[in-house]
Length: 194
Image (tube, rainbow, N blue to C red; front, side, top):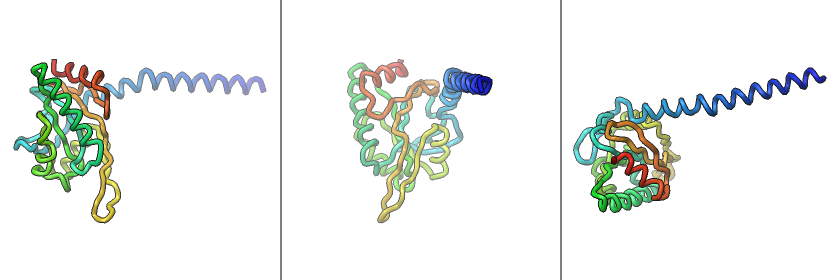
């Protein structure tokens, strides 16, 4: 009986060591690997200012990427409001952040609809495309998006609420969480702006 207890304790210790290795060694490597590939892919989308949006669009200037949709009842308008506030603060410092608002609802969010939706926020460019290309972008940015049930012809979209920051080389820098406080969001933005 004592021998069985000893084996159980050793099994518990081994399981704890494996869990610790996963937590402290494997998980950070996986996170870094995903971050290193963030935004990389062969998606071909279009912007509301008439340009193509591809992986190369993230290069040349720091940018933020947010996935949302124009029928969004809360997360998207709130986030755009936060962006407007950040842009006001940054403008006083002589800076601006380029923001891409990529739709997760290409069926309803045509480029004219998106242009109207984002036009009130300085520096925000709407992005749309075919459902197949939007799916590629969702995968490339490691975003969650799911269409809800259709009720009376209407539906909602569940989606990741974080904004993704990229440096001028197109490398992922940091996320900004939904409704993250300015005291932590703005330093992240300033860091990518240099």
